[in-house]
Image 1 (cartoon, rainbow, N blue to C red):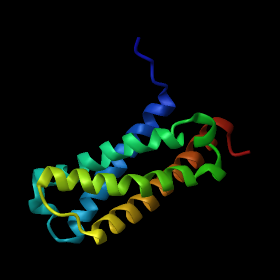
Image 2 (tube, rainbow, N blue to C red; image 1 turned 60 degrees about the vertical axis):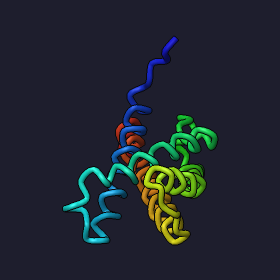
Image 3 (tube, one colour; image 1 turned 30 degrees about the horizontal axis):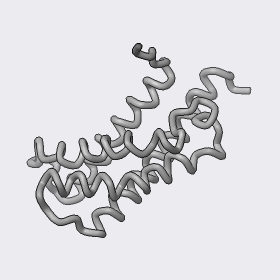
Image 4 (cartoon, helix red, strand yellow; image 1 turned 90 degrees about the vertical axis):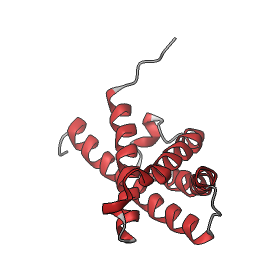
Length: 134
């Protein structure tokens, strides 16, 4: 039986995916190739998303009580740090190319910071929306 996804979880998952798209685009832009990369961006985006969804649930990054707790922001951060080598490996397999350690460090670091900022913004916005300015 399929489980119905809550609106909050849908927003959270969608935001994660949009964030990984932005990280991918910014990564290509930082190399000056965003305008010409086209579908090559998918070779980074899909492994990044796949690795995230293989790792993140094990650290409860979608558990409602933990998502809204400031002290639990370490969960998405470390989930991304753990997911980055897997994403790089998947990308390397997809492209049949070696994986440079610096790519893993940059992908993991930038993505971990970005996901943490996004999750903090989520707490701020959803907290204000649900509980007022209080």
